[in-house]
Image (cartoon, helix red, strand yellow):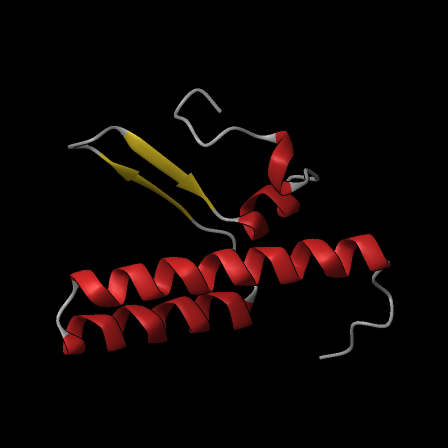
Length: 87
């Protein structure tokens, strides 16, 4: 994948996002069994590589997640849309 068309600030944001994802994966690894972790990691990598936008709504906690790709598909930066159901 070529990143030559990205600006420095876009690359920095991407690196920061990947760092945050890595921290989340490490936290998930501690919480999940090895098999569950490997499955979640494979899914996460596949979704990032496919560049699909995804969102998830946890009905039990009412927490909502919108991937940066989902926001980008609508023309927004990650920080421009809140991760809540009203979005």
